[in-house]
Length: 529
Image (cartoon, rainbow, N blue to C red; front, side, top):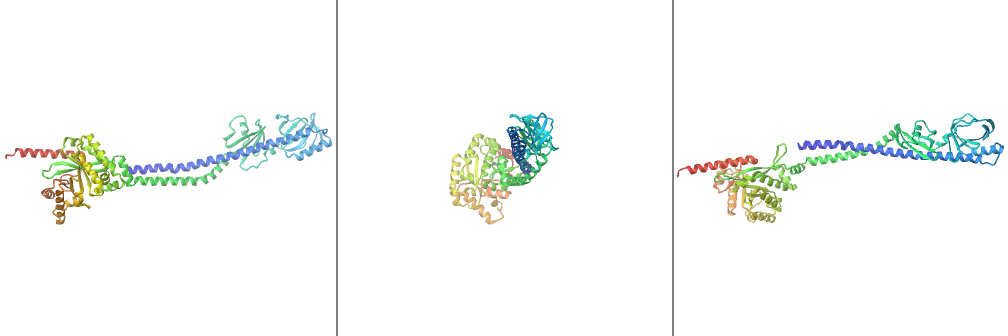
């Protein structure tokens, strides 16, 4: 169940990790494209507005120059001066002199024809009257801009206001500060002149990205259509999306790596420790002389939330190697006190054997935890046997210090699985022990292998010489029980008496065993002597 949850969680996490970098790069591409286009438009509009201001100033300067001339109007010298100004002033197409609605002369020469007055659109601060979209009085031509000062006028081609470098995809419009159109590079964006007095001067509107810039009496608008803007976006996305894909790939690899870590045995074990998934089963310890249940060995089990269990051999080595055995030992202590604490208080002769790892024995770090748990449960130290395998006593000096401290507090120390490692009589003599447990492998061969039986007998004699209590593990037949009892072994455990069982089952087992013992005692008492 946990694995499925982790896998599905990784898949659900992977989807946004794939999509978000791509979406992010798309957003970055849009913002970069928008910023670049906006900067491009601002630059163009600024140049165009400056150009419009310069063009008008140049034309107005030529107009004021001829108006201030000391030559009499329309004399050959005056007409020559008009022609010279027209030639030398790029923005001016022609110069004329009008008096009492008579176009007397101009840079074309003497005229002398009626001239209807032009509609004046606005007047500048220095008195120049401006008319937009007027027709030349001499020849048919495209609409011009007329500037009038005193009796003189000049005509300006509106396209002069657009004399800037202009890319094909851009729209450029020049107008007056009042929002009147002067010239446009192509139709489409002139309606933005309505935003001169209201609305934002830049942004996306009506299918265009636009920028409006003022310069004196003139306004320039540069615009880019949405279609052309999207073309630029596609180009930037083609550059940035590979980066988004690379980033998504890195994130997916990290998720895969993290998922593998979480699905590894070590990660599962770490999660089990955090979730306190460890329970304790209890295998009865029987006094062989009368069959009474005098205790139990606490055996840790890893139980998944779905009820399935993991064999200790599958996780204990990993727990010891990773150091997770230490918190597991703590959970075992808590579970033992919770499960059997009340029974241990009631039955002071009953004991529980708790297995310790090598790191527990060498460090002694479990003792404060155990002492606190016993105080809370009101269990006595003599009711707790501390078991460690031969490997637990490898660091002999540290182990001896821990065992001595534990025995001083009242605990009993036992060596488990004796005979499977390197222990010898000399090694045992260096350790302050109370109990020796004979490994099941020796018990299995009783009455089957003379050599093994000899070793078993030797172990029993060795324990007796050290005045250790003896527990035989793995008793499965009555013959094994009888042999061990005959050899003076005090205690035994194994399937002959009962398998390791949950706390509730052990409590029932103990009560049933105790009631049978009471009945036997009653029968013996009732028998005549």
